[in-house]
Length: 628
Image (cartoon, rainbow, N blue to C red; front, side, top):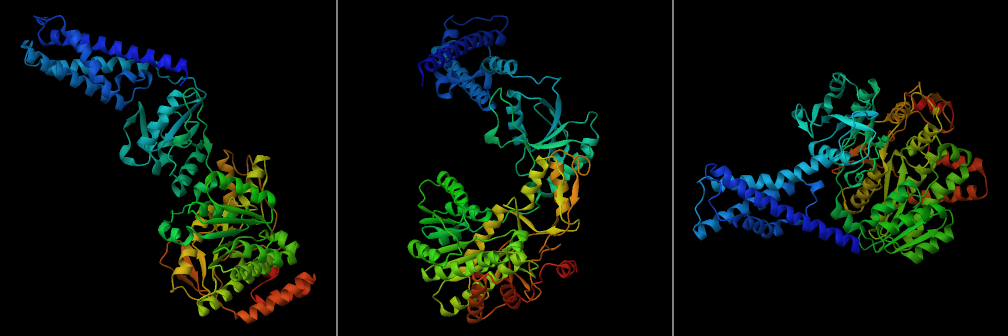
């Protein structure tokens, strides 16, 4: 501590001791007077000094000398009151022990009350006088939404911070709190009837501030809907750990679209995942992508023996390397730049790293781009999966997890069909592994879109909003399944644990994440415009551009012959397997590899159509079929 700080602390402590002593001495005199006004001072004159000395001694364990009067809390006031009560009791015992008469039988109680009031009242008054009062002419007014504890913490921070708005009322999460007051503010209503509560206000607020981090899903969506009709903007308070210090403005944050997903948090079997991952050598391909990087983050939390992060993009893998280094600095890891299409390179890497578990997330995923580069999509998504699976198996891996997509179901694009080929290869390898009871097991996990992932519609809409619009939607009826990347990866890990440990799972079964209900893309666009504090079709236009090559109006999670089977694990479904013989798959992949390497687009597509008969190439047939 600097000398200046030490001097200030010593001066502050001395001042507290002097003031408390003086207050205690006055309290003793006042206590005698109140106990017997007719004879206010029959005791020795040294008793007030005894009171001062007593409060100094008693105050030490209660920390009275170190209190900062400006920030006195209820806990501090309770400590002061306790110290005052003990001091009064000590003085009464001292008088009884020395034979001094009490001025009245009520003297002990009166002395306790007077001491407590004398010691607490000046401190509380000082805090109230120093506390910043909100200026009535602040440019904006706001309603605060939250439970009692969160609202109290935010209001306390807001009272100390510089602010352009003043809080005029509170909205509770439960109707039982309506009519009560917190920090002098009325609780005007409950969140489940926000529209009515806001409509009753004489003065409409400019802002609604959400102070509860857990307020998400449909409840939050209903609040946004009610606020939009009254032209009130909704913002979220920062987390309690990031509330601004005194005299600094609290940075309110916009509601993000991920907050509106009405999904229950699935509880993961952490103990089971620790048995699967902890002290194991783990590899993630496509580690720089949205799914791969989140896999790396969550895997790092389970302390693997070594984490290998592989990606073809140097910049992407560097970014996740920096993040994992900060997250788990003691974790042993390898950073590898490699392409899953390079069979010799992948084989060499696998032999060097000897991973026990491989999460294969590397893929080309953008439908129109893959449609324009079909052979590259087949080489990466299908043949790259074969390369990784064969190399992992030859290196002694115990488990490979393939990250698939709902676009592999009744595919209308080469991207989707290539991922279906990847599924087929891993299914065949898993069946072979089960029958041999020794080789690498393969678990396939299929799910829909991830909010905010690279190349998804959410970052596109955010970029278009930043440029003032318009937001581009391909078709007014287009729907997609969505979940957050964190939830998707958590369920991938859970499916990996279940797939390798439970014999009841059918050979080659594909895990399908429970994606909930599909969302219309145009509704997503409108919601994002509202979250930006703007009005759809008024401030920001929405333009329909038409379906692109390979796109469908509706995605599906199950093929017609893949009857969905529930599992005992929340959030996980199982697709009844459609299996292909491993020898036939290897032979077909050999043909595909030859066609792809030789650049024979026609032959490659013929093989693709033969292997995936439900594949409908881009065109009107795919659109009409998806709309049925």
